[in-house]
Image (tube, rainbow, N blue to C red; front, side, top):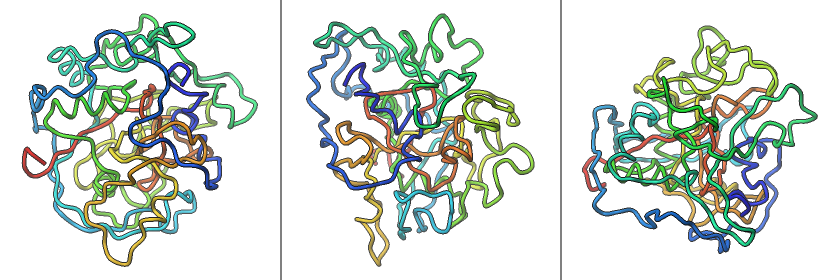
Length: 361
């Protein structure tokens, strides 16, 4: 796991490269405990969630209640969908609260101030090759590329990049308080949700909320193409990754609530930043779980299975990001799902929180 990434194991998450690769069967990833990497964290970071943090930051003012219900989860006749999105399955969910928008820098800063939490990207790691300075993966727009498979042409490891410094260097969070927090690994997102008295959404909860009552539709707003009419979301318009026409007004992330919400009131369920879910990723899980009857509150597989990189455990991310483009991944669709290395963040992955009907859910 060099530089916490494995041998560029982020191919699925940072570059959407798995959109271009078939889902041929491969060995399973390691189980939920993760691999024995021989890399040790330093810096006194909490190993487990502090019980005293539970609910300290509880504030439901920006949460929306989603009524219990059933829906068809997965892709139907979407010609942009990938095999991992099939087949559709009837799913029944209990009601839950979900954040109306992605967690912002201001919200995450309050969590860090209250707890002293240090994110994965801010930690020094000791390996057999010596200490690895803190850092994270940052998108850098190239002038030209050779192909769409070599994601190293536009993704760079940047020492010092973190949620405090989204592009690395001296760039901080000035004027970015209401932008989605990025460079958060899965455990960072879980820690924040714990502090809020909540958790990360399951894949099923996320998709149910994203659909906004539009069953079997392609996008959170219905079926209209995202580039038709007024801007609907923050994606890459133009020739990825060398030319962005900025029809939506932004090259990178946009402030939360910039674009209209879906029918349930949720913002940015398409584009802007990918969002962590609680489920382990499996490219074959939708096929393996298929039933005639509706699944009740599915939690995802017990282990991950990724045919692109079988050695790195991954969680599911949903929603697409400002880098999604019709010619490359088109993952601003409600059924789109992607694997992301559980121990890594980038400048296009964020999250939002959920909780059940009662504080203990």
